[in-house]
Image (spheres, rainbow, N blue to C red):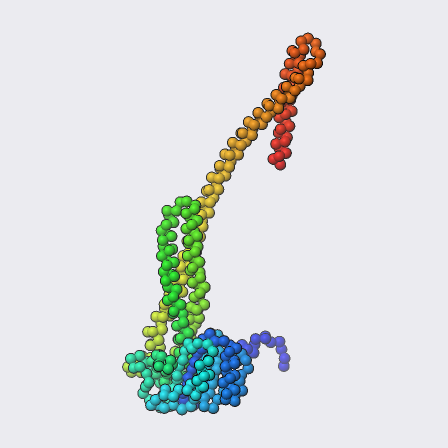
Length: 416
């Protein structure tokens, strides 16, 4: 039977079965490395090199999950968004010295030294079938609990030991399936805990920037009522915009890390709940231990994110307020300039009218003088001078009107 299907349907269905728990026969030793910021192509080549050394068929390039038996150990390789997990599993474990020879000791030292990425979590998990006492831990920070309906026990101290690994002891798991599932929960708790804490240095690093910005916002807010000149308001707006820009840069630099940290923290809490811890006498459970140590760090990250959001909103409001003040000041200045221009225009109009009147008088006088020179020599009845003067006098309003109309016409044409 055939039917149209989405191109991502098979991949999405596979996500439900990605990175499954693998059965682990007790006793066993497991070493886990979580490598952050890896080079994917370098990982493929490095994994292929290990497979070639042991005659194992390597996975296809870009594979997100791989499980193979290398003889002395088994390798479970898994890719995540920000890190890659390398899980090395070897059979056998000494209940008296469960961490004496970890599984990673079977790996070639030169191959381990060139592992792509940077280790963000490194964990030894020793799985023994007897319910032995916790050993190999620093006693003042040990945590433990009965898990899985109290059929198994878990112990750890969450400390880095001299080899750079943390240690977890799992005892009494009754079957390989449960042992594998518990081991996976434990290494995921340790890995996600480390990934969640990556945001703490970021939060601490951005703290001084936020404190400076908050102080600058407070100072600028106090200065606002005293600002009366447009130039001062503009300078303050530029300063405020610069501070707001620093907050936005801090938000851009931290938001992704803080969001990822919150997601990893939720995963830690979920994995802890899946363990089904029951307290043991005299020591805290893993949940209680992490609640006292991890929760304050996550609270710091959360508070820093909230502080950035609050300062961003505060800065945006101050910028908006000051921009409104600058806009009002600019409108007032524009009104004053328009009033000045109007007064100047009226003065220019009066001056133009005065000049126009003088021009009419001057041109009329000049034309009448020319006409006088032309008509005075002509023969007239009576006294010649008197007759010429009467004619010139009669022409005064006519010529003045003609000159005025001509000047007005030219001015209108120039205005258009």
